[in-house]
Length: 115
Length: 113
Image: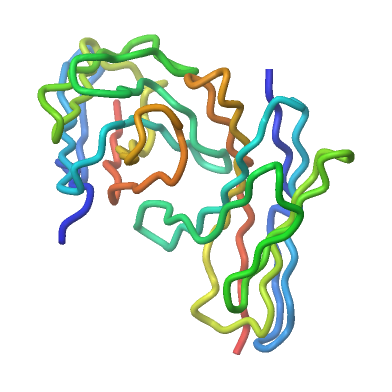
């Protein structure tokens, strides 16, 4: 049982480049999330999707776009990467579409460096 | 908005001792309080959670207590083992504000054998 799978695990970008982080879950969960984690800080919510076909902004959405491709997959796109987006990105999922943010299952993360 | 403060930022204990990590929150509307454990190179994993209608919850060696009046909750780990060494995060969630998830800054727990 894979749970939440993120790709890639590591990525280095130059300022201005674009890339898409992929996330897939095999638990038939309704809600999916993207968080970023910066050194010495807690997790901050970028975007979330309560159900297939819906997406909503979290605390720090600027500079990012998301796509809920289907129930399993939720991608995060950086259109023009900036050094401030250097971070570890985590995808997560949860079963409920009403009780957002409860009982989150996280992927193993993507370490992104923007030079 | 919600603000969660977590203390201490680092904690070192001897194997077999107890460890306590405390969090305070500011928004009285928050009603769900999870704790996550993050091992090196991995994503956070939920270890225990509590809702605002419950004062205490236990699961083997870990327990969480909640004081709604004082707006603080704590994680208690008894009989610590080296495999408990990790970063622990608390969080507070307000169901009326789904886009806002507030995590503490984390506590690095080291259990010395």
